Image (cartoon, rainbow, N blue to C red; front, side):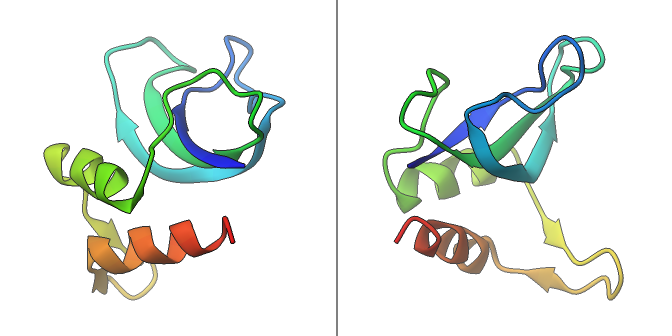
Length: 91
């Protein structure tokens, strides 16, 4: 398993190799339904860009000024915590 950046298929579905996704969406310049880059956990067969380590994922989020905010409480979680928790799911 690996953590990748992906977009939805042209039909608007999650690619078959993504086993847990829909995280940390960042708008891109593509047209709908592929207008967000999404982070998820994928099988090793995925060909999309993968993040080699926590530092690479954290840098990607910081470079894109990503803020992780709970939509119900408006509490902002530090990106270091978000990335660490996601990386732990790889085992």
